[in-house]
Image 1 (cartoon, one colour):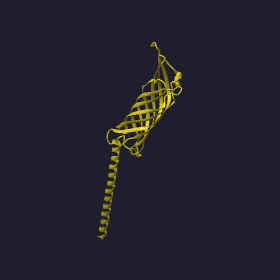
Image 2 (tube, helix red, strand yellow):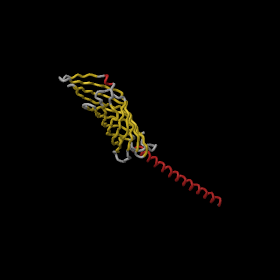
Image 3 (cartoon, rainbow, N blue to C red):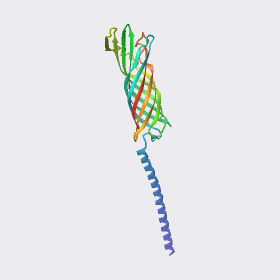
Length: 256
């Protein structure tokens, strides 16, 4: 009889231990499932502005927009009449998080610039219309707070170096009788500097379109630090022409 009671107690203890283990396992499994579901939900609904797996926002982007060029000319004689031109630009960038709200944004852009210079001498008016295209490499420092709202503002600032990739020079001359002649002047094309330095600054906003994709809109000012023309362009007038531009950009950002 004692043998049967002992055996029964052992069986009851084993069943109790098994039930407790199963309950503990179910609790662990349920907790893991909840965390997994939360992770999936965050991944599916998380905005494109969320930090990536490295803890920093890193994305690549494409951008395009008009480039409104202007120019300023100085001379040791009568200051010529200088005006800018409205052209286009497009390019790509990458945002690299430095921590907190700071980023570095290297870019490569194809930018069309240009200007017109008019001068009068001896009763004739000569106008030079220059079309210049550069491949530019800005390195911008970006400040972008992590806001929970739909619109997130940012600011950028930094230098840029551009290399001249195409050029054109059209010369229009109007004589005292009002007769105008137009011609391309290949010799004047060599009077443009091949390297351009500028300083860029601007503000913008970005907002999410869908998971891992956002749109950025920005307004920038690029101030030229280099003379667009070489010193041989007009030695007699000792002319110096610097250019600047206002850029309106729209682009897409893809979270890495």
